[in-house]
Length: 401
Image (cartoon, rainbow, N blue to C red):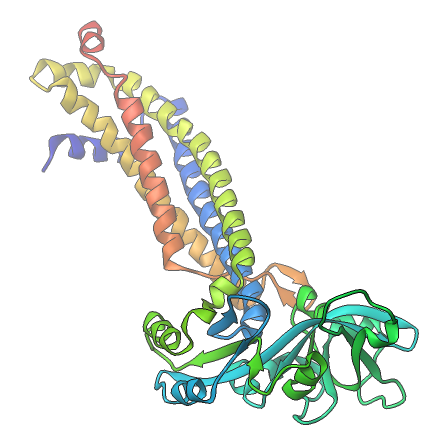
């Protein structure tokens, strides 16, 4: 066995004759335990918040979306439709027409985005699960499903035929507008359902049959804004993208769910990194206790170190003793902290110890990557702290003992 490691283990297990040094050592170990536990709990909390936030957008975001590169729409030919139908990795796809519109009902109005969808849309995304009340729209009709925020702004009900919704969109063309009556295409529609996803989508989107949206925008039968795809399980997304791109060409750009929510992912990842760095700074401060504990231990064991030096141990060997001791404090403390954090996060998941609202528990998510990140962070900081403390042992110090 390595002599330095053996002595380090003995020093770690044995108590010093000086109670102050024992107290400092206990404080150092407790600091590492609490630091590692706190870091993992916070990372688990942010992972839970991330999953909780993204679950709402994932309900209405497809696996892949083909968006036009130039302008607001593109032409989808019958040949391209047949080729898409023959792709084995695609479970379903839906043609979409999307545009900003003006909604008015009686004396109230608001801006929105109308999203015309075909009959396959429900098989691409789980839109039914977002319906707060009412039902989903029927094709070949003037029915709308509106967001909860828009419904509230316009004071809409469901199936209120005495209060239709007027949908306006500017007519395409050039030149000066001579009459406001001729400046807009408009259609009267009725709300048949209200969805609730998140505040942004609730205040923005209105779903409509694709034919209604095409007529409102003067689109041709094969003219659409985008195509949304649902992929089969366990398929290679990159290969599917290549296959779709080969059919649709350069007129579209393909985005997956993460790319569709690029800003949201960046915000959540930035917040997660910021919290990690803040708690790492707290850990760095805690490891000053480890350095102090090791230096006090060096002073306490100076007679034993002198004996080791005189019988042939080198300064490097003596440094290794306290390097190993500090590393063991860090690793053992880190592991105990992780076990403690796992118990606390598991209790939160099972018993909902901390609540955001009376019915909503604070979400946490136990991830292996967070366990690895915390353990590596604790280990690196422990090694650095041990190295700093062990370098206090020099040849001149040994000779003066």
